[in-house]
View (spheres, rainbow, N blue to C red):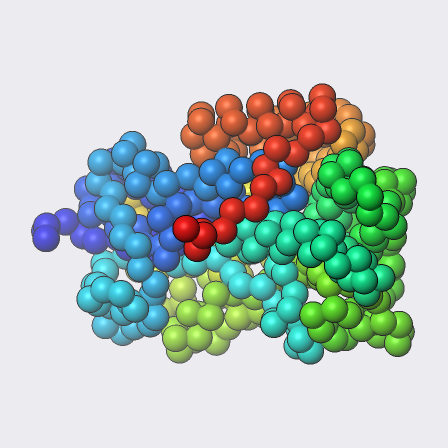
Length: 419
């Protein structure tokens, strides 16, 4: 216990680490709490799921990152209640904790929009366990079909990807390259070329946040690689072996990857305040909650608007990191009795990779890039954002080897229960 004010940060994602970093020199006790003991680099989870990189390349120990922050303590626990009136937090695994300042950066959960069976049978790609589950599920489906060929006709090897945003498109592109670049060689006596990857998007175009030329480029790039793109279509029901579409068509597929939307962490419901769409917490220009200037909400859990444009910001890593940093800065300003600053988002552009030699980038000024140049830019930015030099080094090696050989060395199945 100290006589310094206690700042509690809930969540070790981009937003939470951004806040912690800006409090490095603050005269405060900073406590970061997350249910995991690692930070996840979410933009590359689909590469874990498709065996391109190993799990440790997108997961970095939080306590390792904390070594650079002398006033930071880290606890692994799950928060169950936030009492704004008492300024107290309750946890599943540890005693309640009081705070002087609170930064809520707990991220989001997948939103299945009420689609029947999706919560039980779909595979989202928002957490590292999600990516690992999908990876092993796909590998096990191919091994099962190798033993029982009747499963192939039943759709065991087919995959449906829901969502035409970056997550869905990147996943579909990576999956078809895994199928066409690796599995056709791994399973030579199976009709691997007949396995289907289908992308389903309700909107009339994929990449709705991009310009029309990028939308068309993305669709062509997917189809060129063998992905079937279904636009203006929606999934109405998911079973273990079938995907039902709104048009009435039923697709034979034992795997459905869900990349269609997010909703705020359910903890927001304990705050007792009016929430915005998707359960997100509304915040003011300084990112604090109305009536509670000591509480900040940032990242995917928050309904944040850009002070300059008044536009609601998307649930992406860029806005989360910048918002977390401002929340930390504003707390540090409070401790120095300085005036707070409003949140002004610096848009660095949007990018996505579709597959080998095919990526897209759209800058704030409207400039776009497509193809190999965009892929180089995408790779440079993502390497820079990775936590730790070891992760960057391993990722460069895996990317380089895959680029030369088209091999994905992480496609192994490990059973932790095996003795």
